[in-house]
Length: 166
Image (cartoon, rainbow, N blue to C red):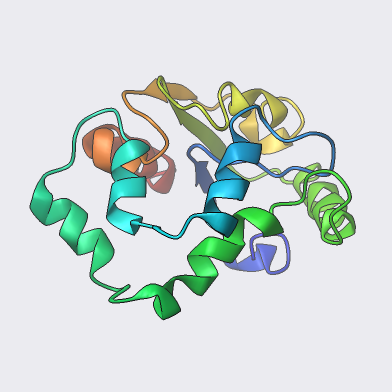
């Protein structure tokens, strides 16, 4: 959305994400794809809990499960990993076009990756320097795993507010 409607954005704060344009997936991604596709049990709250550094409470896990009362509601969550454009995915040209926009992005672009992020470990390095808006930004390592909003919400909010004030 950012690269399709860039005039609607003044800044970006990215946490634990990537913009793959082919190639091999990270080491843990293939098992994740297989689990999402084939596992008869797909506990959304448990999956989020596994991607955090701290243990979520039973109430927090239940809150993540709430929008998915049965398996028919989980089709999108199950399909998502197969849509990430690694290897020979049909979305790779779209990703390359997105990078063409980002490679000209001059507005603030701040990277905040978790210190225990496994999927996109060191993922900020593909953005810093390649996206002009990363220059001079106070990129930081936050405390946590993939779901940084659960592990370091205060740190993430501080980062967002710092960029929003500019």
